[in-house]
Every structure is written in structure tokens, then in C-alpha cells.
Length: 411
Image: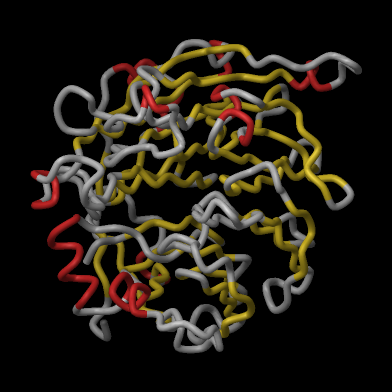
């Protein structure tokens, strides 16, 4: 099993193994302290193309998402995620697989394809950061890879049963993230990838109103919100260092002036995912980089080189900071090298290879959960980071408790 974390809802961890939907069993709840986390299998998402009328053979989708073909492909290029899953409460879930957008309203036991995404969508359909739930509406950003496709933000007001187009983004290659700001009650959108396509903006009245853009500093995936600021990391695979940026909310109120974020840290890899929480009134923010492979084909010609890990094997990193430092001092909680794979011996860019990721989630009682994926010695584990390591002196020392996820017998 290559376990993939999707989040915590109602105190229970949601995960997938390929297209299998796993939900933490009640007796396993709150056991991320070295004990196994037990899952019950709720159902399985349909194979892409099996429930749609798109007139094209879904051969590539079957290879990517169906055993034994997926297993054989993974043995060469490495494990790669094929599902996004977002719980909207105990019974309602939304998921993407390939070019299919699905919803379930019985806790993940059965699924219906509600809409087709662009044909060039990646194996996961969108990025994991591509959906947000405001409590009243679900918003999802499309992630086409074809250059002749205009990405859109889709809207559902019935928890994923039906979808309409809320906004079109003709300047963007694809949507990196759609994020709900609980402090201001606003929806933010991030896009990429070339300079002109990089924007961070607000979704208002059917369009994305840019806060800033036009350079790689605005090439963000995840956004993390605090009462005073918005934080993100740069997703630029060809940069020598990627900045972590902080944009004060006060800068958004200066009419007629372009806000400029402040650099608070820099890391080696592209920043993909973030999380935030509170320990005894002190806020923490964590960001995770990816151990990327291949070549960024949207880079300028002179920068079109292999991605992270320019010296040695690509490495993913987890960093954290707190409100006590104004989010200006960052500590490394861990570094994880990508799993070596047979495809790695082929010159980069000539054969697809799987990157390594650190999927993260925050929970009020469990703190920060970290799921290394396709990373050495930790693949498929779930780490819980101690409170004193998030907000105390222990943050400088590294390490975290880990639990090996397990499944119940019907799998």
C-alpha cells in the first residue's frame, strides 16, 4: 500500500490507496503516536472513462489508475498519486481522478461522475490545493496541461452534485489553488506558470481580481492565512532558491498601490503545501517542498534544466515558523530524499518520473500531520509533529513520532 493523506474531518483521517477510499475507523481515532492507524475501506472511485461519454479511448487513464498496469508503471517511474479527495463532512465527499469530477453522499461508499474536466488534466485531475469549501459553496480550479485550453473555476452549491462555471482565467496555464480565507471570508486563487500567468488574486463577482502577479514571486500553490497576513512559498522548479513570502493584510487596504510581499525565508525546492494551527495561543505555519524530477517546460530556455536536487537526489523539506518570531525565523523539521527508481538512470526529461511529496494536514487536536510519499525510509507513514516542536525549542532539533497506517481485513 502507498498511503496518501487527504486530510482530517470530524477527527478522522481520510486517505486513499490508488482509487480505494479509506477512512479512519472509530477505534483507531486519535492514535498517531506510534500505534497503527486502522482504516476501513469505504469504497472505490470509478476507473476514468467508465462512467463518461467522452469519445476517446481512455487507455492512458487505465494505465495510470488501474491494477496491474498502474503497479507495473509505478515499479519503473515510482509511485504517483492519482486521486484527490476532499471530505465535506461525514457523508459528503468530492474527488477527482483523471478528467473525472466525482461526488459521494454516503460517506464514500458509492460515487457518481458529475462533470468532465479538460482532457489534458493530469492523473489527479487537479492539484490537491485546487478545491475549497466555504461552508456554503464548493469551488474547484481546473488544471489543464494543454496550452490551448482556458482553465476555469467551477462552483457547486449542492456539495458537488452539480457544477457551473464561476470564472474563466484566459491568462493562466492552469489553476494551482483555490483557498478560503476564514478571517476575511474571501476566496483566493493562485495560478501559473510563466511570469505573465503567475497571479495571486481574489475571486469576486465571477472573475479573479489580481492582488499581484507578473513574476515568479507570485507563482504560488498553497496559501496559508493568519489574522494579520497571507503567506505562501514560491513554486519555481528552476530557481536556485524559492522564497517564502508574507503579505500583510494592511498592504491590501492601500488603495492605488500594488502590494509587495516580504521575503521571510528561502528553501531549495518548489513549495507545494502548507498548514497552520495554534498551540496555547501561539500560531504556527508549516510549508513543505517537493522532491521534483524532470524539466520545467515553461521555464525560459536558458533555465530549462533538471529540477530540485541539482546536486544529488531530489529532496523534500518541511519547515515551520511561529507568530512569536513574526514568521521570520524558520526551522527545518525534516528532509526526505526521493526514492530511487529505475527511470532515474534515463537522462532527465526523456522519460516521465514520479516526484516525491510531503502531504500535510492540520487538526486542532492532533496538530500537524505529515505524509511522505515516494520518499526514502518514510514512504506511506503518517507523522505527528509534537506541539513543542511546532512552537518550542524542539523545532530546531528535527524528528517526529510516526505511525504506520494499516487497513482492515476487507481490503
